[in-house]
Structures are given as structure tokens and as C-alpha cells.
Image (spheres, rainbow, N blue to C red):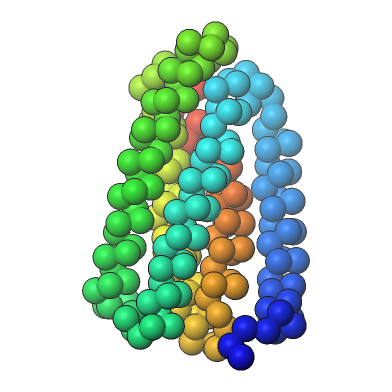
Length: 185
């Protein structure tokens, strides 16, 4: 029997505890910067989108890598062509998704009479810039986590998703505020 719930809990509980603590940190960043978000409700609407897209695509990449490692289709090397292909496809899908969703959010907010205080070019720049930074980081973290956990005898399916979503949530918020400062709104 390959899977045992006891082994999954024993391996996963410490990791999930650490992830919870990091998520609390991310929530504190939002709390500290709530004034900025309240001035720009369109950015407040964007936080769940930023976090979910990054976490979802990073988790998909991690699952694909885990499957490839288990099946022997991907080797534990950065030069593996299948790993590189999955890595770059994840980046492209993420960037296209952030671009499309930023435009959709802007126009839903516009037609929904939500106070925006930002033009479409600035808004798309903020969301796309956040997405670029986040997708690069999450894709690298997915590869490293999948490779390291597989090398240590842990199932990447149990480690990649919690790490990637936690990093995505926390750094998505940090990158959002960084880009708000860079764009200067």
C-alpha cells in the first residue's frame, strides 16, 4: 500500500502548521495596509484573484511534476525538457490569465459603478506586474518543492500544494503593494 493516512498526517501536519503561521503574516500585511485598499476598492476585489490564480497554477505545475517524477517521465535535474516545458507553459498560462482577469475586473468595476480611482493602464500594469513576479516565484518554488520532496522520499503531492498556495497568498499581497508603489497610485 503506497498511501497511508497516518503517513500523510505525520508528514503534512508540521508543514500545514508552518503554512498557517505564514498565512497569518499575509493577513497582517493586509490589515496594516487596509487604508490603501479601501481607497481603491478595485484592488481589494483583485486580492482573491491574484492569490487564487497563483496558487492554482503553481499547484497544477507541482502536480504535473509529481506525476512525472512518479512515472519516471521527469528526472531530478533542472535540464529535464519535460520539466522545463511544464515550467514555461505554467508561466504563459499565468500571465495570460492575469492579463485577461485584470481587464475583466476593471470593466466589471466600471460598469458596476465601483469607485476605482485608477485608470485601466495603471490597473492592468499593477495586476500584470504582480502576476509576473508571482508566477515566476511560484513556478520556481513548485519545481524546487517537488524535486526536494521527491528526493527526500516525501510525496510531492502532499507538499507542493500547501507550500505554493501559502507562498502565493503571502507574496501575492506583498507584490501587489510593491506594484502599487511602483505605479504610484
